[in-house]
Image (cartoon, rainbow, N blue to C red; front, side):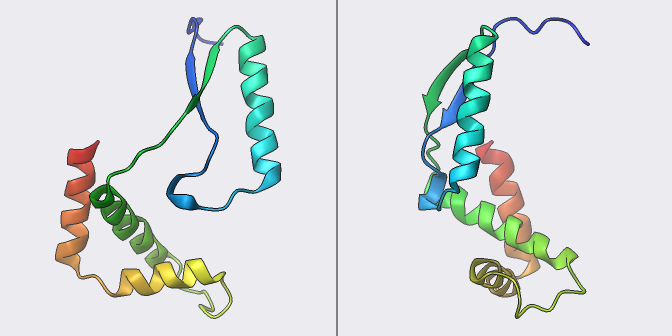
Amino acid sequence: MGPDPGVLRVGVLEEPPLGLGRDDACREAVQLAARTLEALGHHVAPAQMELAPDTVVALLNVTNAGLADYVDIDWERPEPHIQAGRAAAQAIDSLLYVRSVHDLQRFS
């Protein structure tokens, strides 16, 4: 083990960002992890993720473009939101992709 990190401040998202759905098993796992961290003496508090619309657009452009790595996929089979992400990635050009990467670098 490394050095003691001291008391950590941990933020827990109680609601998924962007209005996305939430799986109950994931929620329960996060709650268990939060309770465990508190029992270890860390500070755990609710957190919110606020993203500006420009940040979301840039993030989706870059994230969706990552689907290009999957070349041997029958694109009729993935879930609809994955298919929509791939279609969105196909609709942007390389200049917009690079601009989105640069936007994310500035936003972070």
